Length: 438
Ligand SMILES: *Cc1c(COP(=O)(O)O)cnc(C)c1O
Ligand SMILES: [Zn+2]
Image 1 (cartoon, rainbow, N blue to C red):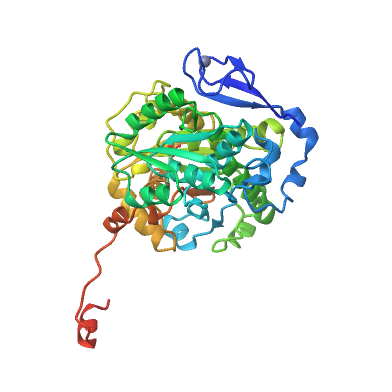
Image 2 (image 1 turned 135 degrees about the vertical axis):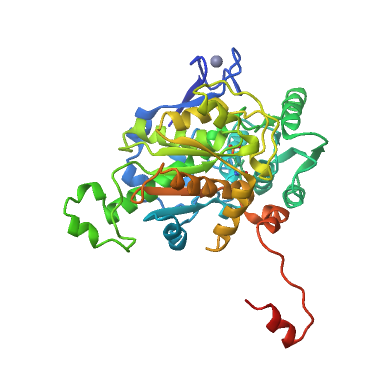
């Protein structure tokens, strides 16, 4: 079935056939949205068939993806996606919330959300017979592309700033990619990668350049949709319960029904491709008629790297670059490459942008750690945003809320150590132990 029928420019709306272009709009540089044939998809599969799939990875959504098969002939890519959702009760209580879920993307094969994009991009690369794939990366996108490429024996060249955290660089090297460290910023590495791919004919995964990354990232929205439907069926909506006594019964229970307001999804934003991808996923489901209510999407940025949030608050789609400075390296971006669609993700869903300080991000790392989730700074940023949203009453206690941890704390232990007090060093005596136990 040919469900991938073309591209549409997110700026000028020009449409292209799948063979006509490969990256951004030739007219204005706008990022292209992938157009799917929704009628054909609807005819080929029903939603209840899709959710019955036994495939525990994002490939359960192959009928909704613009590639024909994972990894190409005879190969399967590592199982990205299908990440767990936790119900962190103590965090929910501390915030006065009743329905807080945390989807842990650090459980992906290379320990970040980026695996979703790279899995689909590598599948595309195999399909078009690309010899080499390449990307610029602050670390995670490169690790994901290198890991997914290694899984199928695809050659990869990764450009990263030399300042990337050592664990991320180690991943690139271990996966056998050719790693090129650029003595400059991520933004400089980004432009260099595009030049190199044009010069050498490589297939470029760059975020906000390759239209297939968002198609991979949208699979998180599909998983959230499956999860939310299941939960809604289980506990129902408070809006449907009119009897107050009936409501009282649920005061302390997780079985308490949630509000009829849309699900709120919290996601950290750097280039803006994850949030755009999640928005695309929900838009696909809406277009298919499989989703009743568009979730509200909240984008969280670090104070020192807030170009998308700035545009959102200025009610503008003009993305003005900043000189990015935040310890959350994965969302440290001067010029967000998917900024326009990232602004729209919040505007068009009734969500918002929220800006948090590095101190708030460190506090979020510590808070998540106390319920057993180890997030890298950019991963904990979304939770820092939720804390602020509660303070500002952007969400209500009975709302259903899902926070994404986008990356593992093991990626950047230096930052993690800033979030906690140092451990005491003692002499090996019981006396010394007595002095330090809390
Ligand atoms: C890339 C990344 C983000 C942000 O995604 P964008 O598409 O750049 O907005 C957030 N968290 C982690 C861990 C990432 O690697
Ligand atoms: Zn255009």
